[in-house]
Image (cartoon, rainbow, N blue to C red; front, side):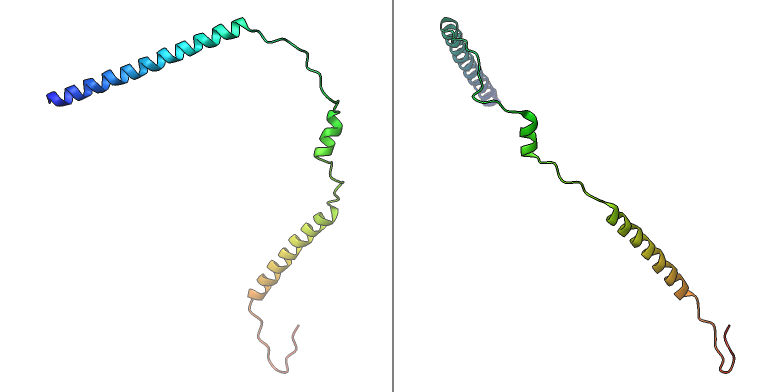
Length: 109
């Protein structure tokens, strides 16, 4: 039990020392950055673009507008397909009905 407490205490002391050393190093680096950035100020300049770009033309060049798309023939195909499915359902329903008996020599009405 004594060995376990000594191990935990050593781990805590080591972790504390490591964290303290990192904080000390970080604070010294930040102090150096603050002192060097305060003494040397970069000159301020105006940004001038090298060339002019028209946003509308640039957008049209990247994504050209697709041609007009006529959907009428495809709408007609959809209607025909639905009609065909209805016709098939009606034919299947009619096929399920038994065929009436036929007798030879007796006409069918």
